[in-house]
Image: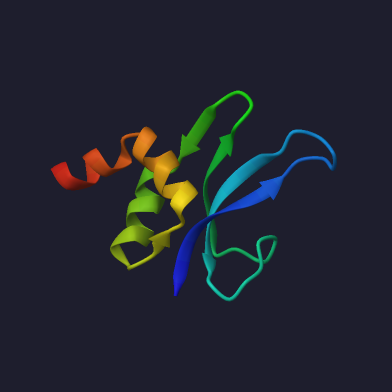
Length: 84
């Protein structure tokens, strides 16, 4: 099973930024991802989403984690999904 999950990036002991990745459920947080589909910076509150890639994985049955679901909902991704 594939999940859309946050993967921590950035320097140690500094403010983290996160990549939104499609990853196998059995992989660890820093494990090998299937594809990078966006990033999230909680300090600057910036989000970048590769919408076609996210929609592709959601159509294939990928489940977003709770945090990723909230980020995508704030980015109004699910409104685009229901209208198309």
